[in-house]
Structures are given as structure tokens and as C-alpha cells.
Length: 189
Image: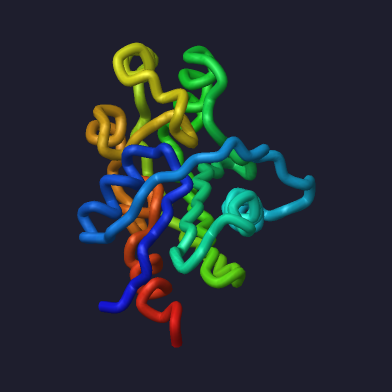
């Protein structure tokens, strides 16, 4: 396998763990990037737009490595849910997801030799109806302010609330590893 070293521009411990599980050699480098986006984009376009915007911040500093950036959003009833701003906002988001199907969309950008390779993945997540007590105790215990849609699939609310997933599990975690691997092995082709 001839994959160049990866620079991961993400503080997400979940993305880091997924790369470790894939036996990928990587280092983490961070920059603050404005994650705003123009109005009128589809949810898929938003995820890809932000992932590319994050990669553009590194364009002049990347050598022979692959800069990997990603952005995950949750979409329900036509609304894009990013990361909650407060615990109360997290509770509100989880109430919106309760008893419904929502989409988790991760946009990924691979910056390699000044070329941008962008792609995305979409998974559908089916949540059972959650009680306010289940939601409130989750938010208090897990502090999901760093998670799109206010939840982690691998944490309590995901374990007790998700009835079914259609699509990639790792995409819901925050990085579609199947698609990522395919893109990485074809970088030099």
C-alpha cells in the first residue's frame, strides 16, 4: 500500500481513532477556520464546501503529505444541524431527531500536490422516540457540544436510541472510511 503520510486537520478524537483502526500513519495539525457557508447550498454541498474550506487554509503549507479535512452535518426535516451552542440547544436538537429519520452527511477533502479531491457520504439514521429524561441525562453526562446533531453514535444515546442505519456506520461516526480508503489508494493513479 503506497499511501503518503496523512495530515489530519481535525481535533475529533473519533476521526483520529478511525484512522488508527485503519492502520494509517498520520499526524494532527489544527487551524481555526470559519465554518460559515453561502445560502442556497444543498446539505451535501455544505459538507463538501466546509471540508474544502478547511483544506484551503493549509494549501501553502502542505508538502508531499495528504491533508485530510472533513465536516459532518446532520439534516432533519430540511434543516441542517451543526454543533449545538449550549446544553439547552443540544437537548432541543435531540428532541428534533427523536422518533425520526435523519441524514448524516460527511464531506471530505484530500489536498495532495495542490489538487483538491472532494467527496461525501450520506447515511440515514433511524431514531426511536426518546424521552426528555433520556435526552437530558445524555446531554448532562456526555456534553455533546462538539458533535453535529448533538450526539455520538458510539455513546449512550446512540446505543439506546438508534434502531437502524442505512449506509456507512463510520460515516455517522464522522469519517466514511470505506470511501476514504478507496480515494487514498488511488491518489497517484
